Structures are given as structure tokens and as C-alpha cells.
Length: 332
Image 1 (cartoon, one colour):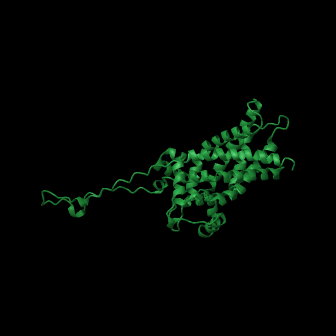
Image 2: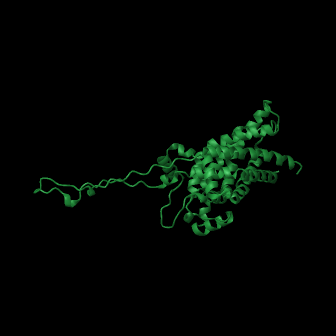
Image 3: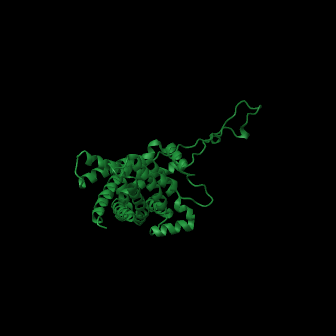
């Protein structure tokens, strides 16, 4: 039964991930909007008043101070207007082609194979162990705990694919000279290991783990709870309608809970670290502080519309496919 849970969860996750990949790519591009303002260090605006040669002399009644003695910094240019998900999608198609919407899809497949298969399988095992045998129910706190454990372990396993996916999705927004041009997820992982060290594959892993724990706990626990409530109250029968309703509600809960961590995770994973230079962000907290200072608190909810637009269909595809796969494999 344990192996079966991993197989069922893995198949459903890969189908859902590939189906909603373009929405995930748009979400990543939106989360990176305005990042240049966040990572740039403000220049101290110094006003140079008098040069030593222009010090007041006792023999002169007046001193003419040339305008060149003053240095008044020009104001920074206003930030570009933020584009919405539809505008971002259209821009990607115009500048990079329709195929660009599936940039990094190989990384998505690997990520779902490693991360989602692990978290879904572990959650299923914990659910079986922690379900009360007499009432056949599982308290919400246990569901949340199972989601936190399963999500954390799954994220640690799948972090290399997650980093590769973010970079491949974000590559098209860079000038051609700065692009990494990874050919596939294997090429991305290989180049990262050679150029930045093996540890770069786990860059942002603490954020990935935190986000995965939040997503898994909110997504799986809320799906099970909402589905059980619908069936107990007789609102709908156990079928496609119930699965879609419960999964979309679970997707909304997961999006609200995880978006701030997701924005920081995307920026930390995508940052370019050059030898001998200080990285744009020292860590998750530094990234969060710089983002909020430069762009305001709501910057942590950048990409929320595509996040819910992606998380909703992803969760629906995930659980609807999962329920169908369970029916197909029920005799195994």
C-alpha cells in the first residue's frame, strides 16, 4: 500500500504539473518583476558644498561659488509599470514564441517525480497510520502535521529540480548575453554543479522546504477536510463535482498561505552569484527585507493572480487525476 501511494501520487502530480506549466512560468516571471530595484544598493546622496580652494579668504568680501562645486544627484527613473498575467503571457509569446511557455518543462517533470511523488506517498502512509480505526476519521491537526512532514521531506529531495525549473523559466527575460541557455534539466543541474558547486543545487532549500510544508499541509489537509464535509452533509455525491469543488478550494487556501514564501524562493533561486562579488541576497530574510523596502509589503503577493490561476487548476488536475488513478489501481 505504501508503494502504491507513491505511484498514484507521482502519476497525478506529473499530469497536473505539465498541464499547468505555462501558468507557473508566467507566475515566476511576474514574481521577478521589479527585482532590479530590490537588489540595487542606494547610492548615498552626498552634497559637496565647498572645495578647499574656495574657503573664505579674509581679503575678499565676496566669494563666487561656481555651480560645478555642487553635485546634486539626478532622481532615479520611475519603476516600469507592472504587467498583469495576460500581458506577461502575450509578451512571452511575441518575444520568445509559443514554445517558450513550456520553457523548463523537463525540470517540472523531474520536480514532480522527486518532490510531489515523495510528499504524496508519505502523506498517504501517514494518513493510513494516523487515521482512527474505529471512526475511520483523521483529526485536522493530524492532517496538517502529516502535510508538514511529507512536504518538508519531499522538498528536500526535489530542490535541485526546483532550482533548475526556476532558472529555465526565468531565462527568457534576460538579455541574450546574460542567458544561461540550459538545454534541459540535466544540463542545468550539470552546469550548476560545475560552475557554482554542488551546494548550489540546494540554494534556497530552506525556503523550498518551508513553502512545501505550507503548501502540502494546506492543500492536502484542506482537500481531505472539505471533501469529507461535503460528503457528510450530503451536499454532493462522491464524484467529479465533489473532487473539483474540494480541490479548487484547497488550491485557493494553498495559494494564500504560500505566495510570500514562493516570491522569496523564486528570487533567491534565480539570483546570479559571480565569483568575487557579493551575492544580490545574503539569504531569505535579506531578500524579504530588500523586496519590501524597495517595492512595498504587497510585493510578497506578486504573481498571486497567476499563482491562484495555476494553483487552482493544478490542484483540480492533481486530485481529479489522483481519484481516477486510484480507481484504476484499486485491484493492485
